[in-house]
Amino acid sequence: MSVVVLISGRGSNLRALVEAGLPVAAVISNQASAAGLAYARERGLGTAVVGHAGYARRDAFDDALAAEIDRFRPRLVALAGFMRILTPAFVRRYEGRLLNIHPSLLPAFPGLHTHARALAAGVKVHGATVHFVTPELDHGPIVIQAAVPVLPGDAEDALAARVLAQEHRIYPQAVRWFLDGRLVLETGVVRVADPDARQSVLATE
Ligand code: GRF
Image (cartoon, rainbow, N blue to C red):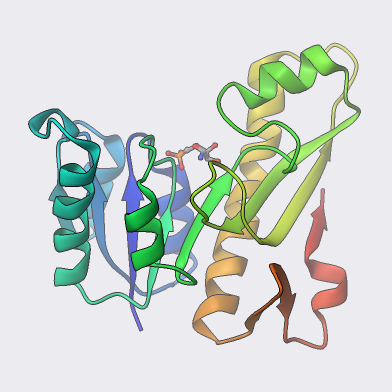
């Protein structure tokens, strides 16, 4: 019933998952210096580093990553700031049990620099999305979203912090729903089998 979390850096979403009491068995990073790895070690979680620089080919890196993941026999693999594009073969291997958190209201602003792009576009509402991973980057069935206002005069940092606070709420919620068997995928759309979920799939500040 455990979760393996993949990170590349800070690891604040990892921390939110652990502090929510979710069964995180291990943390795997492609960066040995990731701050989230130090946190995981302090907490006594399993850790592993699969450095992408050691692999000439993306599929060889993904195979090595999968071998590390599978050692922990997780029910769920959660990407939390994992800054590598995964091959379609990797995504298929974990189909239906691979989640990602992305700092925008998808399908708006897939990819990088979402907060700067939201400010440049002048959107009035921004946010974060937890979704099942499909081979297309930052696409895939949406589990839960959180919306925040974009305030006049917002700087990128302020907006990012407002979104991040919501990320830390919705990722644990999504993982808990998954582990409780409540996420039902029907023709590419996620339904949460929970009588109260009608309100909570959209979290607002
Ligand atoms: C978060 O904004 C997440 O949405 C994005 O990368 C960032 C990771 O932050 N995918 P952290 O490492 O969890 O603090």
